[in-house]
Image (cartoon, rainbow, N blue to C red):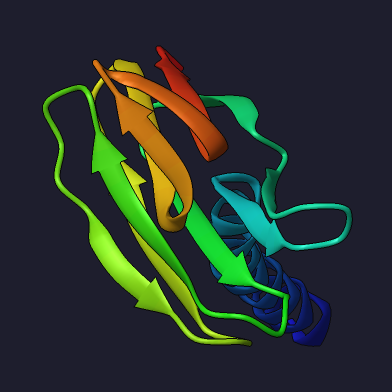
Length: 125
């Protein structure tokens, strides 16, 4: 009788720990970071990334100067100032191509971005 009780307790503990660990593992997989850097000219690292729908995109300023993250081209809105060390994020829930730039370190002429520009392609899971 004791061994049956111990087995049940171990089974409940194992199932409980799996329920706690599964969401943590999937959250880590569903995020991606773009870093603002000014080594050899200001740029996003990387400047392009393919991700799955529902991915949390994080922009982080690892430089010592202020940057912005501003969406352009496409049907999305995001505009934030990034002081040194700051970050912002957006969860991309729809397929498509998302363009962003730093308005301080890029120029936009006739829809063409030069300088600190980036692109995200969101695909189906």
